[in-house]
Length: 213
Image (cartoon, rainbow, N blue to C red):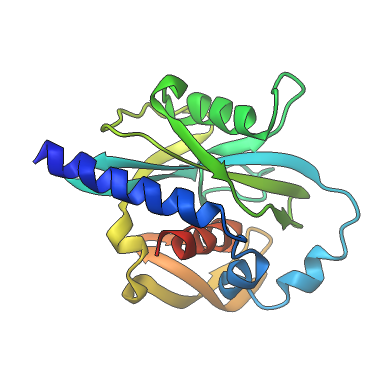
């Protein structure tokens, strides 16, 4: 079973590497999962701070998974309690975007970067509500990982099978209430168990799914 598992990973990695050499799907695919009016809102912000996130694929129980976090609830956090990729602001100590994504993942979910192979960077996405421009980094590990959450930043770690993410039956539209009380209608989402993935994370995820499939 293990040999079959790693053969599958070799095939998946080869496919991703090939697709990353092609033009990225980019904003056209990202905005398929965007709330109405988001593009116009993004254009009203003049300055964005760079941030990096890690989209990590790995085997678990003979299936390929991707890891997400649920952010802890903070009154000052505009993304409080939302589902996200591990990541955060690019700091001066980071050598580049990849270094920032790996550092943030080490801090937030306790991975060892030596167990992770970076595949490449995806299309950056501007997040107007928090004024970050997010640079996604796609990576994989070829063995099962043990995660340890950073209690101050991460409420829980969520592991989702890739098969679920690529299944269109897990897509839906939902009303989303923001922390300021504003309600967004018919927001495209990914639904996994009782978890709702929406906003910037779902937009970046949609590009990843396009590359995977």
